[in-house]
Length: 316
Image 1: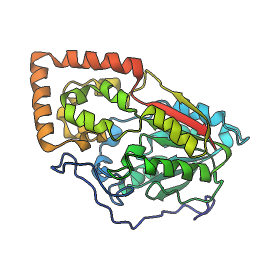
Image 2: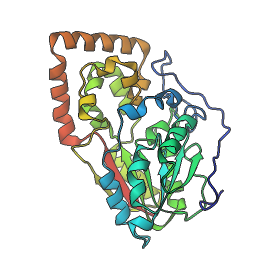
Image 3: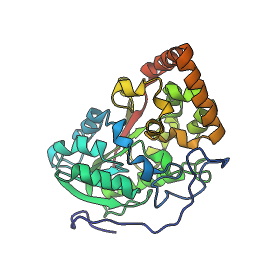
Image 4: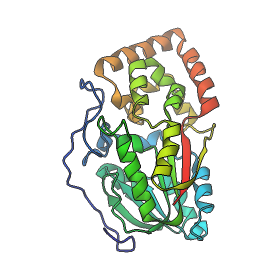
C-alpha cells in the first residue's frame, strides 16, 4: 500500500492480460481478469482513443457529483476534501471538480489517458497521478473524503466475472476501504435500458444488445453497493446530459462515419467487423434518403425520458 500524502508518483502494474481489438472477429468479450495493463480496458484501446477523446466527450453531471460530496459525512466542507478520481481517463471530470475541492488524486489504467490527464491538470491542486489497474486501489485505508468513478466499471468485467459482477463489487469494497468513515462514493454509470437511447447503436443492433450485457442493471447496482458495506444509496438521472460535447457532435448524422468520432465511445468496441461495415453503409444510405433523422428522433424520445447515464452515490 502507499500513502496518499507522499510525493507525486506512478504505480505501474505488470500484469499481462488479454484484450480484444475493436470490431475484431473474436466472438466473445474479453476473458481477462481486471483491465489490460497497456490499453486500460478489457476491450477498448485507450492508447489510441486518448488522442481523440477530448474532442467529443465532456464532463456532464458534475453538479450531481459535487453535491453528493458536499453532503458527505466526513465532516469536511467540500473545498477541503481529499478526492479520488477512479478511472480518470483524460481528466475531463477531474478538471471540472478540481477548483471546488481540497486535493485530487487521479488514477487510471491507461498510461496514454493518464498522461493527457496530467497535462490537463498540471497547474491544479493535484496530489498524485497514479497508474494502476482496477479493481485494486493502491492507497492506504481512510485516505479520502470522497471518490468518483465516471463511466468506467464496464471496462473491468469480463466473461467470467460478469454473471456476478465480481470486479465491480471488489472495486466498491476497495473504495469503501480507502474512504474515511462517512465518505462519499459516486458512480456515473450507464444502465442497460439507457443503451436504447443512443441513436447510432440503432444501426448496430447486435452490438447494442451485446453492449447491454456489459452493464450492471440498476437493481443489481443498488444491491452491490449495499453488499460492499456502503449505506444511504441514492440515484440521480440528469435528463439533459449526454456523453458528447457539444450536442451537435452527438446529433451529427455523419459522425459515426468518422473513425475518430467512433473512438469517443467504447460501445463500438464490442462489435464485429462485419457489423460495423453494414452499420456504416446503412448510416450513409439513411443520410442520403433522410431516414436518419427519424432514427435520431425515436432514440431521443427514449433518452429524454430515461437519460444517457445514472449517478449512483452512497456513503462509507
